[in-house]
Image (cartoon, one colour):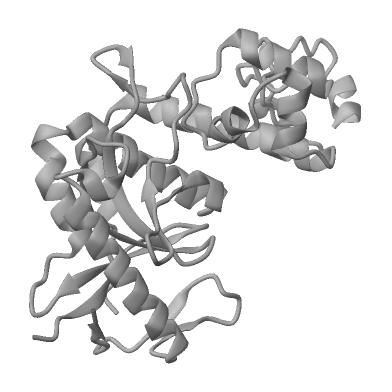
Length: 128
Length: 173
């Protein structure tokens, strides 16, 4: 059988970042709500009752075609007792290498750019 | 006159393998015809559906609720799925439902056959001059593929995550 990549090829030739993000985010939110319902042994109809909505409306939300407002997300988070979206400050990761055995290499690596204040290299060695 | 189709592989992702069908001695599948027809006139709508195929293929699998049931007498589905009052599709900066329909057969969560489609203008597919032919054909092909599964012409692999078939398979519709 001939193996093709027809979808990837077409998408790469027709990139639309806004649609990409909408599809990915709406599906991710719908999937997260679905997972939370399963974890809590709830059905979409239960969520409809909790939110005072029609079950058909909730079913449509869960298809991933719905664009959720923050108001709706907050209501869902409130009735399910858990956050669906986490907005946190982005962490900056700093990588550094510490050589323990070879003294020559250690000196070389100690000058790597890093935001970490390693005043005492011995402490860093212990931490590693 | 008997009409035959053969199966053409479209794309395999971690969660879903997509296939289509090709008529007689043609080389272009129904799904590729769908591309060709809507690439110019409905590019955004088409992109929305194709992106959907990619994302569910990579991340979520072909779960039933991610498709729109459209079977008259068979297991035919369509994309995109049913839309709420606040749809995700955006065209010219405005949110609106995507009226383009791609008819397909969701064989299971891992295998989907993609057919053809068009802009749907009425509530029922059977009443729409644009899609009724595609809808009817998709239902016919779905029935034929279901029968090919029953007859063992198309087989599941051990984990039911993909299908096996002879390259020479011809399915009568």
